[in-house]
Length: 193
Image (tube, rainbow, N blue to C red; front, side, top):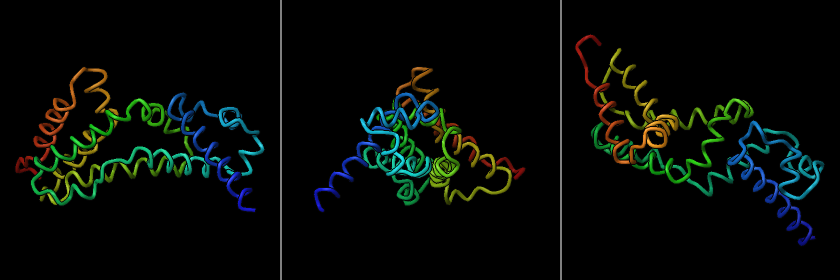
């Protein structure tokens, strides 16, 4: 009985790993159950036995990928005082993470709308957590706060990192410097808040 349970778990992991490979190469929009089955060397029926619907397969795939590529701990950023100090540390970690796994993240972020609603929402919430932690406790209020929040969302975006480093050729430190400068400009109050 134990041998059978081990085989079932091994098959399940092959399916998850196959899904991760496809999501990080061709992207979720181009990943089919047939493709997953072929990549895992199982039948479509076997995939459905382990994952009765796409959301359950996406959850398992996401969990597996995050175990292999843990993102920065945004909650720890809140302990760093000062917007500039926190931003330099946080964006250094985040942009470093993007650099280390950006090739795999690109198809996932690009195809976000092809994912189940729950997976899309989880992705949005994770980026919001990065942005919120970046500016928590800033003391900025009113319109200036709205501007600061919008800027925080912009600088933590994968697409911002991608544009600055991949498309425009900045190194990580240069991208962090530019993002911090933008964030600090947004944090300044102008008396009209």
